[in-house]
Length: 466
Image (cartoon, rainbow, N blue to C red; front, top):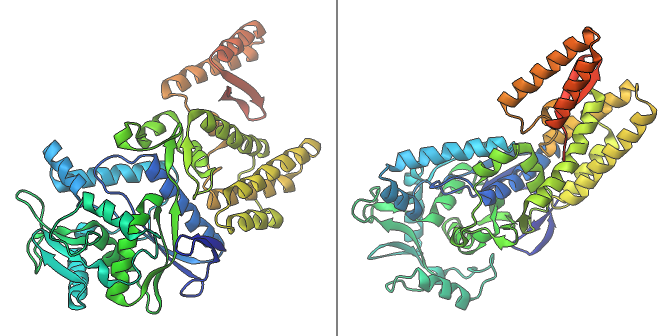
């Protein structure tokens, strides 16, 4: 497998710390609001990575954290009058529900910052003993000037970093780049006891401490892969790498992977621009698998421009897979086509080249349909196709719905009752040889956008795609 390493700025062969094992840490959400499309894009990128590594035979340990103590959460508490626990439990649950709708599996370990306070304090103590930490009026800070490898991940210059740091700065800091590892609490804020005073952890320290607790290996590197959005490279990941390197005398991760931004009709998604697109709203309109397929369709490192025209084009591509699935009508497969599997994994093992992978899928669909046109009763072929689709379920997370259920997406329960009642009346009219009535009902269904197909198992229906 080749992966683009944000540290070296090039593709590199994936060589795990421990043979046949892969340890991955991905920065999860700060849980003060509902998940948006940016969260979904990142989660899907690393869900795909995890699936491909498993298909390659790796034993994967996947950790994704929840930041459940932060300035934004405290602001939400002030705004809503609700407790920390009420807010974070609500948004963690909503995040999980949204991710589940996209077919994203839970991480193997999902630590929270507030459950790791002791580990964070121990981590800061170690840095303090090594003279990397100092205390000023509002907290305990990391002294970045003592790390000779600072900026090695982000490639930033001193001036760039200092300009950003001054915006958030404290005049007592030894260097504008220095960052808080422990923040002293203000009156009314959530706080935890520490040797330096009551307070809470900084953002960067929590990830370093949780990686050390749940994943760290002995040797040159603590983990194989650290992932997250491109917006986290600086300062979050730079500071994580810095403090972990100085605390442990190890590099934090061998490979750093970052997914691109999400834009909506060309604008970077940002609440300050007023165009943040909550995932829950998209899921009200589009099925989770349709959104999954669309969001996966661009390479994970590319910026993604979300617009409905492209989404509908993507859906038509997914429709073709389900039309093939509908043709085979077999519940169980036999053996996956070896060439198909190899071509699919070869594409994905090239830094998750999804365009090449989907081209392999498209070719399989076209070839399968052409063969079925000439050999409609070829059961062996149908079983192979079914096995190929099961492989796509495992690796890409698509094709898992029933073929007819897929083409009934977007129909409300009330509409389904009306449609199925009309179909029942049509069947009764046909049995009574009242073809005028049965034809009239078919016409009525067509005006509702419903197409009827008479099969050996009875009449089935689907919504006609525009």
